Length: 308
Image 1 (tube, rainbow, N blue to C red):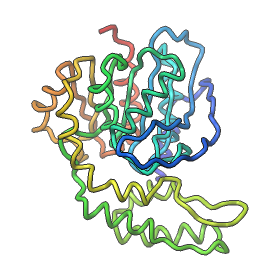
Image 2: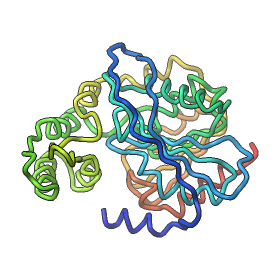
Image 3: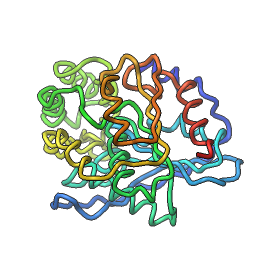
Image 4: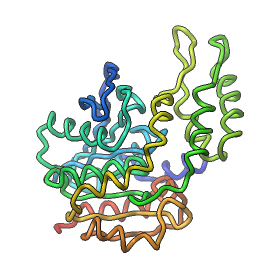
């Protein structure tokens, strides 16, 4: 995490303005494709005139809109767009729902754009968020001006369901006394998670641990119970995607050479789904935008400033 923070601090963060939305009331839904939820977000603007459609960003599993904070601040200095960093459902400050899949997250994004009268937008997503954005672009191509997918393949994912189940089991079974301090609770939670996964993933998940200032109760910001329930359905993503036509708008993939989430041999198949696509490889792992922020920022800003 120190390396991650250092990388973010190296970005040019001057004058971007941030507008925050308050915590949204939680709702519960039970159908496979529920009514969309109203998402929590931060918006970023600079002095540049906003002459192009906005950029909407989705984070990955266990993440939040804060993952895009540094990139968003720097990006608005380089492009003529407003940037929205969004908490996807069941994460961050967005509502918890009993359904979690790319179809539902696409409907959330459609509502988000509709409420702000955006006829179209550039869309960028990392990992789980990238899969949701790919689905959204193929479901609603008229709403997507261009697409940026960060280190995720539409074809397969490397983690086994068993490994992910162990992570979620560790999260949902965590029992911390309200009398514990935050540091004590973090130490116990970290030790438990380390039995299920590696150090870097644990650091990322630990950003979700919360302690109620009034009751002292510990909780996870992400909806671990529901995410675990829908875990076994992640493998159905490709079959759901194949029901939709290819997205022909400008598309760029930005992937890490040391990440298992995109395999080079899959690229010809991916280009059939996204025929107007290109791919960039950076010397990084799965958290490409954290590990190589300057290179990532250059690729994204140049792509967003193109006129194709």
